[in-house]
Image (cartoon, rainbow, N blue to C red):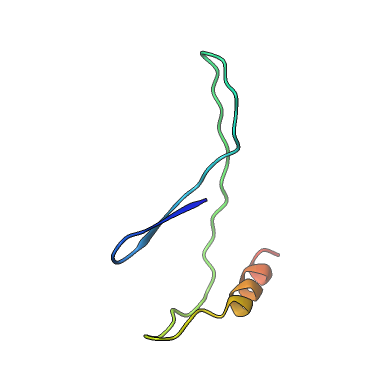
Length: 61
């Protein structure tokens, strides 16, 4: 995954597995995305990595 930070948002660019293709061949990969509730930090507040990790682990079950 590559993350590009712009002034007011960031863009997530998935990078699929490397494939060696012959002419005429094709490849694809599937992404699963979901949204989880997590409050946006207040000005000057930092994201708590442990809390965020816990939110993601609970949501992935």
